[in-house]
Length: 379
Image (cartoon, rainbow, N blue to C red; front, side, top):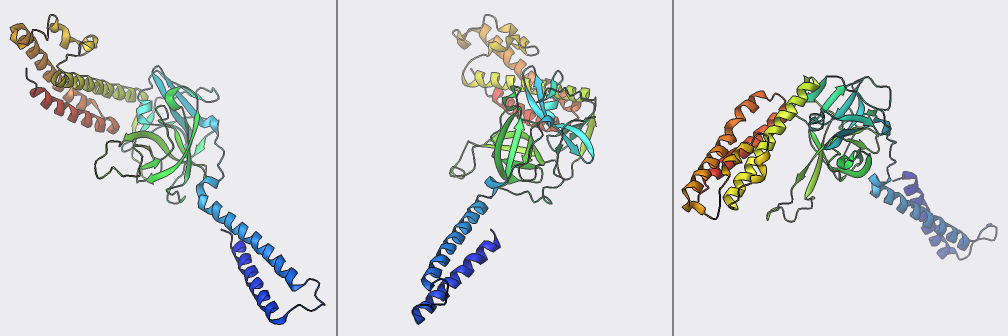
């Protein structure tokens, strides 16, 4: 709010009151004045109204704050569309500590063995066989030689006075359809490693830059969403959104792990295989226990299809009265139990990237749960 506007309004109000009191005590003004007292009062009233209007306008602008911040121009030539056979993700070119990097998420780059990397202007980006992965955040940076547009990264959100409520913009490959989109929002929360934003990014935006509108710098990288729609009595009246969106900060102390791209692809594919097998086993056991259904649709699966081979001739109609049925079910359940543990030790030993090891342990705990579920199946 302008100090000059406040001062002018105060002075005009004081002058108006003094003149009104003087007029009330003296009657009319001397004839030698060029304007009468009444005219001067009317003029001061008019000026006061204008000053008050300006004061109100300044208050509105201040209250709106973020909405009235001029937005820095974003060099779209720094945005990268990551295109894969099954979809895609996002990334960008940025200056970090005096060097130029391609920046994205670990989970985006690890799934990009056959991907193409292009700017929105159609320029191809060729990556060297070298990548640095954050050990605690979903961040991957690849050093590149680049002569085009690039984005500047905030070296310190604290020193730049980045705050909750500040306006931000996310630009990236929304839905993985191959075009850059602009999503606007604000900072909802700030943590030591993550920031929460209100911009409604979707799949394909992973790896997009989160730009601070007033500073024009990158303050984070879009990473993931959390579904918190399952409420209890303590959270039912929460003002927070059911789906909350997060990105990882690029400032602060970050420990980096150096790999070749080939090694990263292998790590990503190893974990993806373990995760897929875990999901299939979990669904199969759930349907077997709760729906009395055998998921024969998985019979063509590359590594788990053999589980269903000996079920030819099995019939739920005959039930457990059939010795043949009982034998087939017992064999099926034993094989399921065996598959829950068969690749756990080898996968854990082979994974060296922290990002995938953390996810492995979560998937591994799911296998423990469904192993218990399978033991409770009875016919």
